[in-house]
Length: 411
Image 1 (spheres, rainbow, N blue to C red):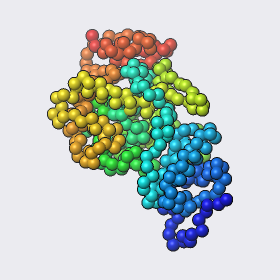
Image 2 (image 1 turned 135 degrees about the vertical axis):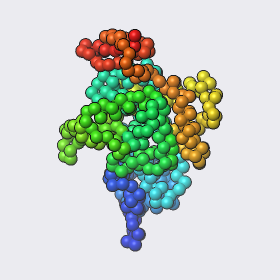
Image 3 (image 1 turned 120 degrees about the vertical axis):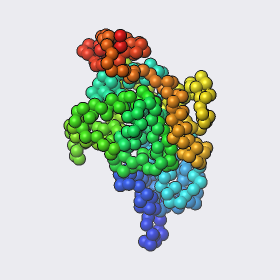
Image 4 (image 1 turned 30 degrees about the horizontal axis):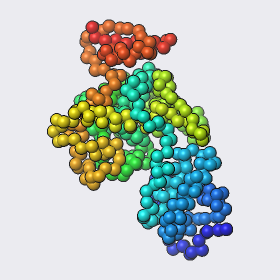
């Protein structure tokens, strides 16, 4: 059976190409693969052949049947042992196909998709889990960069994709001053591929606290000391390797050379790997064989919200000069809030004032503020002892052999 259209559409572009023209080439390739996989799955599951024109006709004429077809193919892909994430991506791609071809009224995505856990458990991370993960980052290769990435993730509540598009010039003046940082995203936030990494395409602001700022400053200073020429166009979080076409082995990039930005995969490996090294990572498998991780980049988002909630319940925002609005949290995290003019309502000063009031709740003391010129007391401690020493104001210097760490504090 075939549902291919017999319409003569030589005078217009086909729906598939009309859809893909809205995106950069890299995204086009990914969407095309998702579309082809969907068409193949329809043939496997339903025994029919369908093309883009017939699919669009179905979406326009019977949205309920179109949604049912998408759900059936989602179930088919899951039954074939594809991951829930991949099946959801194919599902979302087909809704995008319909939407960009003028189909409205598809309704909300079913809860079976939006509520399905993929990586992170529901409970927010504890402060101890966050602290130990960040400490493990400091002691590994590229320690300052990795710890800065984790600090910015947890203090900003951003998706990891956002960090791949940040440049030094966006935050330089504020980082040099120290304290809280506010990033204005008033247009597309493009990564190295030219792809807008914002999930919701509207202007918004986000920021982070003084602890993340201190780590970012130390990371930049380290890169300068190593000979890298840094300017406003330098990626804030750089990579030290690159994959060559046709090769599976990364090629090292010198510290003195300008490097590409970190990728989402690199950030994933940093966070999950550091959590494993800190012995706080928990891994379990679902009935379908999916591997779920306790500590992931996404896990810092609920941690961020929980700390804001803690600050609110403690009265931390009672004396905010402009008052506190809970919709601000959605805005900061790049989500859609109820205000159409949220970017204007939540001004730079408003966001900065928020972070000044919540800063201490987002601090886990992995990078205490140290003043130069003082005498120091040094200690060698174990990994289990390390958090308590940092709580006392000690600074982590380096990892020693045998899972020991060198710390120091002012006398």
